[in-house]
Length: 367
Length: 123
Ligand code: HEM
Ligand code: FES
Image (cartoon, rainbow over all chains, first blue to last red; front, side, top):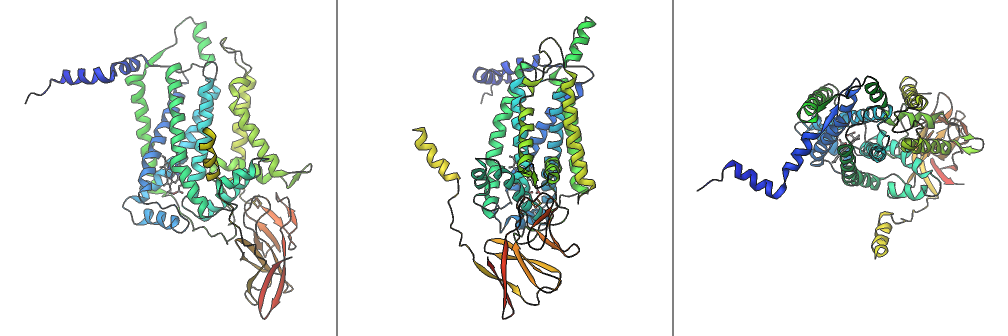
């Protein structure tokens, strides 16, 4: 038999898929090099962790059962009977937390580098949508083991959605699959967690990455004007392979950290949810929801005749809207390299508020 | 066309009303289950209720669903108050919200003791 020459296989594929166009694109992709370049790795790290969530999530699906009678027991089975089940579940849980953390770092770094300026507004919007989806991933995944903490977190979280004026009650029923948190809620959350959210997130990620590819990496205005003043070209490095290899080092480190965390601190399971037991003392949500939790806790029953929780929900909703509209609110004139220090100060304030509220939850669990 | 396809989907995702047999009265426990200054959760239909035996030996029964954001409350013997662990809300033994975020009192139920059974019913 006559084997085709290797070159002919390449030609055959090339004629049908035109991969050389991709190759050409890859050759042109360059990443700016300056003293803030380290932040360019955060998006890639988030992407890597998302891939890890998909992979470990699919593995969990092989044993997990989404019903009130079986969910807790099936996760217990994964942790104690399935070979390396503890590893897969612990990595899924730890990596979910690391993902949220890296996502926050990525988001605030693009905020301070003002990468949302024209023409990257839609990149920013898709990022904010991905943030919302990630929080939804965390919230829905948290219920899946059907333990006590998760049960009350879901009570509170869905009740918050229910308190929204006009559409609240509809949303509450949509989320809970009825008036109350039951096994039906668990089955719904499971559907969101493993089908609706992954599909939506994949589409949005596609848009986000396409726009990043189209516009290239943004250079912070301060660095740009510095280079202009000194009359030199801004330095860059090729994405392939220089930048990607550096990415890979970071991903290897992340895998190492996650494996160590999973081995030393395997993720806890807690006690099975009992709808007829009181909420346990010291209850709190995952750390990335703590700033909202503490805000709701500090608000009294009524403020000027309005229910405190409504004010909290309105405030948090407004903060989300402001965050979404950042590209339009920054008064720094785009294009001229102008920047508003005052606007960056808002970012610092936001971080301070979230950090103080979160630390508060951990140091004074009762108060 | 679009409407005829979307309408069934929209209706499908909002769950059907399951008529909840509205429970009027349940046996929440037996006399002697609780010591004075102790409380416990009981099932009032599909919802949790809280039964408290006061220091003088009387009984109080209330809805156990916090009026703030739906957590299940518990009796704190040390403070002689009802406490919600979720956001540190407090109620007195008649269900009145006394501090923390809860905006409204807990619904109070009637308690009757007959033949050693503690019967709780909607007022
Ligand atoms: C396609 C993607 C994903 C699939 C198929 C998936 C699947 C699952 C399954 C089956 C569970 C229940 C088992 C368990 O509780 O250990 C779970 C739990 C969880 N997932 Fe995911 N997941 C995915 C993505 C994500 C992402 C992106 C996050 C990021 C925030 C996330 C966060 C969580 C959390 C916090 C839990 C609860 C962990 C626990 O206490 O066990 N998941 N996931
Ligand atoms: S749910 Fe009870 S205080 Fe918030």
